[in-house]
Image 1 (tube, rainbow, N blue to C red):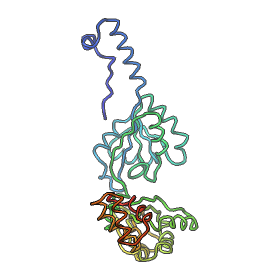
Image 2: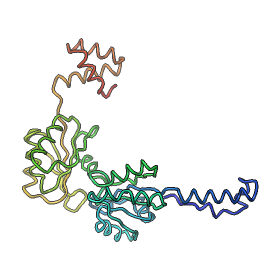
Image 3: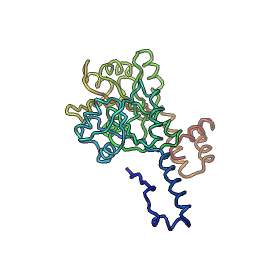
Length: 311
């Protein structure tokens, strides 16, 4: 973290190269003091372990030691992490039930020069966790926001899933009620990117049942439970096989990674032709030639070309 320099402590000799008279020196010191008093501090977005405490970075620990205040989703949970690391800093709760009305007071403290670290219970803040209103308010107030990267459950699960990683869609938590959950899943059914979602151990069985009804029981997936912890479990297979492997009442936090939908044969062939021709020809020519070869409407081919990775 950059050290705040107090330019008001500069001597006359140090300022002599920049000023021409003692009056200018006094004015310079006064202006500098005023600027320092009104320079906003920084909000640090600090990622913390998702299970194994050894996964915290040296930079995260340094930041937590040096900030003036830590805004935590659960002060008790974060307090235990700080205690293990030998860090003693003031804590303030910032969670989904109070963040809307607490944002303004935190903005005022940042404006007054208080460096603040934002942490969640586990992983990277704002990823299905509190913090978005505060970060948005900081940007609006021209207050610096600095990421301190680290663990993130969705990326950790994706990296070991064995499913495509070139494109993925993070959907967060499904709705709690079945009717809303099925409607939500309907909107994701044709998503061709790898799908990632979080779910609680209490609802995972019901969610897997609904996913089979909407996606089909043979859709490939991976279920990650208790990532980085002692009883970490990775289940690979179809949605049906994963549900059977989990059992009715699994324990721990869960990340579900699901294969994207397979494009229909006609679309797959269209994409293949476009990928080849767009790499060699201007878009207009590639579209016209593809439409002739596949006997498809030019408008259909054009719309597909707009979303092609080769364009």
